[in-house]
Image 1 (tube, rainbow, N blue to C red):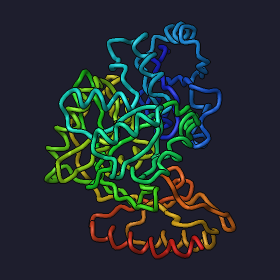
Image 2: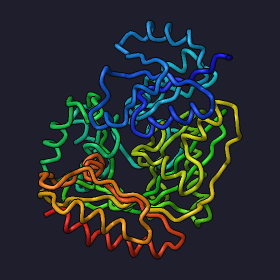
Image 3: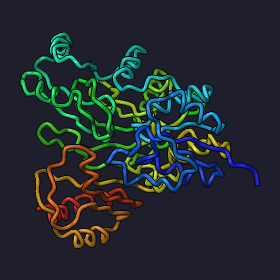
Image 4: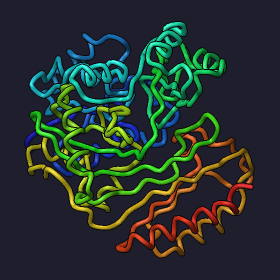
Length: 411
């Protein structure tokens, strides 16, 4: 029996855990590389080591890792999640340079590259210097405005804060985040300070090959603000490819990918539609996390994961766009203040009775004490509901029902 080709996945966690099964279906073995001996706690449940032909642990010896991985003669090197992005680019550039992207995966430097390409973005600064922030706010005329502080290497809205320049407490938040490890286990040696934008937030998920970009889906986010915590998700809905803004979002997203030199693999692009036009929030050079590709398969019959596998295994072509087969929405549980969980079984039963119910996932049990929701990680710790229906009106009706049911869950 001929030897199967090999794909290398760096940190195969979150949605990156789906690569193993998808490549196996394409008759490709998968090798895992971990950037740390243990996966980040927030991703630990998604890691299934038994699915990998071999597992390597990167221990800051790139030369040794490269020498071992070269022997595998891999088809591709792909980042599984945000914590694996930078190492994936390093490894790919040394093993498969003809399949590599430009090494520019730091979100602070990404924005600089996009701005230098003449693309309108959110104004931001990436620094570890509090005084540099104060000076920048004054220079940009933001010294009496709201702005956002967040880590440059994180995911799931971890440690994203909205603050006001006129309030001194922004300095406290800045110092509390600097030089601490975020929930991916990455040191926040710098922070991004970004102007606060208002508008409608979209995500454009793409897959690229040889510089040709394709869109696997466009979703719209609705978020809830709770004091300084602005990154709390209310719901996310899939949009059809014939929306009025599609061409504009496509052109903008593709321009961003070109500016960043992303020629191969998936990307997750967050864009704000403001009164002044489209503005980039950030880019993740990896697939949409949180299990999104699994639901995208239901909504469109395809996903970033499957497109990536199809291209690298050279089995099937990749479609330039997508068709929305069924209306879909993810409703995220939110805890606006700390409380105690109760009535989980009853809550699940009620949600499953909704006409558009597709999946419900509750990760807490009766009696659990929960803190107020601050970011997407905290939301996913609570749970979520996936709705799917031919009629969009049914989704909206069931969304309202879930918010009523939720009141019985958190007391």
